[in-house]
Image (cartoon, rainbow, N blue to C red; front, side, top):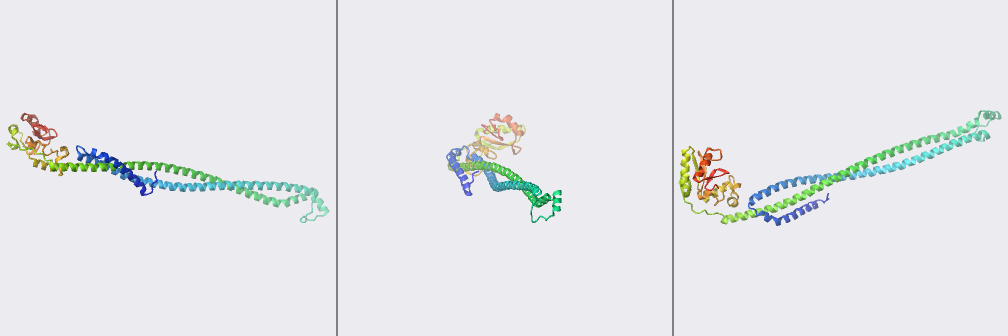
Length: 387
């Protein structure tokens, strides 16, 4: 993982984002000039929400991974210190064990030499006798008896026995020291092996965490860059929407012109279709279908409907596609109602909203005879061209 200290790390990330935004700015205007900038902007903002959520998640993950790597780094240092100490202890124990073996070997050699020399001395004293101030003075008879019974040999061995016993005790002590040293050496070697395994595991985990943190940082940089690019596009689309709205407010109102209208059985329509509409209404009544409806409306009424169904901005009124309004509503100047050539039919006083409605079924079977056709997406809307 790249170890950026503090703010320097985030400056690097932001630099990448700014670079991407700069590149995006050259292409954004072309993308922003859309046939429907409003819809495009909505899409961009939805993408921005997704990216922002991802950035938030990645930042949390990045912080968590950074902490985990730092903790592992500290653990590795502690473990390495423990391993170094265990290795030093093992080396010291090995040296102490070697020295203990040497002491044991020297003590054993001295013990064997003394045993040999004591036996030799006993033989010499038995054969040649001795004059030692510590040796009791014996009479000729006593000496003869001692010679007969081997007294002088026994005396010689007795004199060396004290030294031999002390040497044997020392040898036993040295052997014990050597055994203890070897046990310490074995334990130290085991501790060193355990510390080595623990250190290796920590270093492996640290490497894995660093790789994971590096991948998160890469994704975070990409998400920040994408977010910056989307912001540039969003601003460009806002400018385009404002430009179009300004143009609409200046000259977007399309004049339909004067329309001659008549009342056809309660529905105002263009005089050119008045007779046909009257005949249609008479026929529906004869067939038991109580039709009504709304025909002609002027441009001001169309603008009012656009405000109610599409929004109040100039773009909403004059530019937004009709299918983005609720319900769909034609732009001012583009509605067949403004020409008196369309009718929104009602049945028993309510607007026709379903193709299963009896009035819709009747109109489907008869309206074309009177020159009216349905807009498929709107069961209530019938016009001379189906629009």
